[in-house]
Image (cartoon, rainbow, N blue to C red):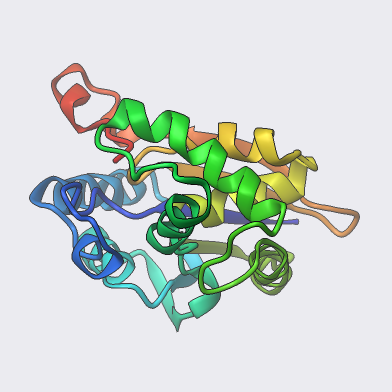
Length: 217
């Protein structure tokens, strides 16, 4: 057996209104990643392979985490779905405005995912293409006898869980919404099928004085 560990990037630019502006860690995002890397080292967690997406926020998160094992490099399949383009497409086609607050986002995201799944909107890829991309990624990084760490984004993690648990679109949205920055998600790799071991773990943020760092956006 092996283990696949998926980590969401640290907090990015929460004030952004487009992908380019969003794709950089905040000061808190760097701190979250530093704490996570130290937690892994303190608990003797080392990895046979370490991968990240090609986005800046992935690379910055991995750098702030520090040395944890063998760096495998970057894989674009770990990159996030393009939410900003999807949101604009939903506004253009369904007159649903971009969210202004986190409360707005909680209602907005399921509408985006449902319309995307029904092929009423698209961004850089169709929903089915995104799903296939993450399915291929899971197959590639699930290695028996290996511990593989992947630094990625919330949408990728949620899709991986959708595939593992066979969730419908509402379930996919419900899983995506609460995924915290630098959260840890564990998958047991077995010859007869992978099993979800842990979801949205934040052991490095459990101390009371780090409550402010338990962010989702």
